[in-house]
Image 1 (cartoon, rainbow, N blue to C red):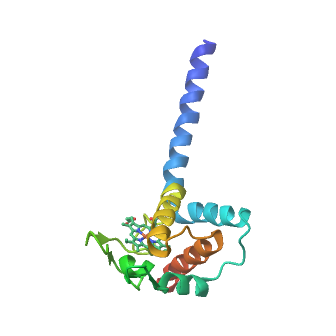
Image 2 (cartoon, rainbow, N blue to C red):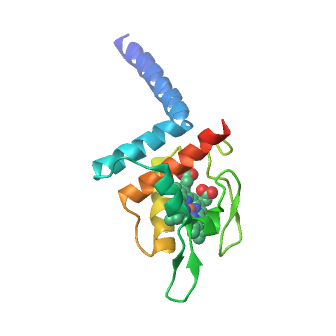
Amino acid sequence: MVNVKIKKSSFWIGLCCCIWMATGQTHASDASNAEFAQFSAQGAGNFSAAQGKTNWNTVVVSKEGEKRACVTCHGTDPKKSGQHATTQKTIEPMASSVNPERFTDVKKMEKWFKRNCEWRWFRECTAQEKGDILKYLMNANQETK
Ligand code: HEC
């Protein structure tokens, strides 16, 4: 009898967790808030969308003379699709107003920030740089609302 009760309650707790996770993962601001909190914990603060826009557009020239920027692949308008510089594959827009899947997963953001910063700037971005860029891309959403 007791056993049955436990099973029933753990079923409901489990179900609630599933619903919570499912809704949580599709909510852009939850994941981006977690990112901002992480950047602040790493010593960054006062995130600036204007600075983020500058970072996003800054061109770095490689040793071979190749010009690289975030916009090389993502394009200058976050609300439009980009195209990968080497594979030519289409990259979905960065603004979550047009692409609700953006910034819903902290792990994904961290993975791509690391990879893209190394490709673009030949080093990892700082917490401040990432925070500014994220703020800029999140603001791009608001412009369309
Ligand atoms: C060589 C091409 C390329 C360049 C340059 C590039 N990216 Fe990306 N980026 C990608 C690809 C490919 C993806 C993953 C596919 C997708 O999410 O549509 C991605 C995804 C991302 C994501 C994940 C977004 C999410 O959905 O959570 C972030 C953040 C990001 N890039 C930031 C940057 C920043 C910052 C720069 C400049 C420092 C940059 N990217 C430059 C190709 C690039």
